Length: 344
Ligand code: DAH
Image 1 (cartoon, rainbow, N blue to C red):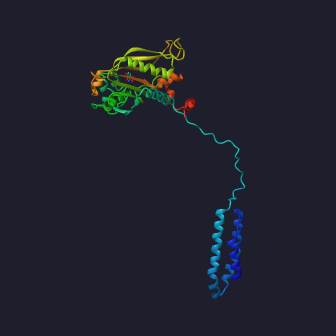
Image 2 (image 1 turned 180 degrees about the vertical axis):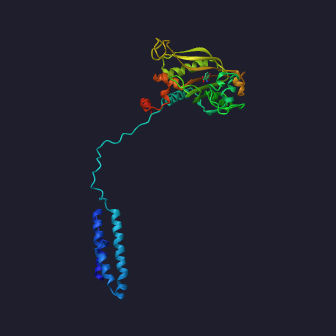
């Protein structure tokens, strides 16, 4: 028995395997039901008490050594147990990696922000849930103005002297900028706005605007005209012309609406510009002194201009999309059209 144990101990210590299969064969040989070590245990059971004392411990040591060795080998040899299945074909093309793309409204917003950044404007943002004061009162809206009607504005807390509402334009951010920023102020304010409108090809209850505001000593209408002209040429091409039509907004005086020359027919008249050669892009004007004073700015010393434009409208002109609803439906066929517009 003694020699047998020593022989097996040496064999276990020397055991070398290359594959899982060989490890398993070794396990069966030593520890399987009819294995050599198992057999020694059978002999051991038949021994007298004295011999059991002599061999019990060494026999257990042999068994443990064999078990440890088998476990150790299992971890080190190559796993060939699943090698019967088909091998991976490394020459096969990979799964296509779907690239996302920017939403067209985001692309236009970024373009506008980049253009005005070049002109030295900062970007300012304000809350979408606003109060009546910042959306209407401070912007010189008279009490009975139709925009203050439930029909046009989503009110959150009606009946309050300064009710909460969803802002109907980003001009509210002008007021917040005037309240908080140091003069001179030069900001643009992109953001979402909300109006209680029936959804159609030309109107939606949620859309996006960019507001611009410049206040300093001696700012004139000529500065406004120049800023808009430079913007229009950056946005729609260097040949673009602008024209200003007199208009009315409660927060600017004088006010104007701005058209750009149609970049499709170059003024000849087409169905996009409805034969006029011009496309309307924004509203603007000189900030009304009442608006400056409401935010604590001395209107004798400072003047300024403001402008506001709808991002969907600019995007519609840029890509000639004639139905506003496309921008909100998340139809992949539409969104994928802008894949090529992604700049990385
Ligand atoms: N807030 C106006 C609107 O939603 C757009 C606008 C017009 C903004 C004239 C201005 C402005 O700052 O001067 O229709």
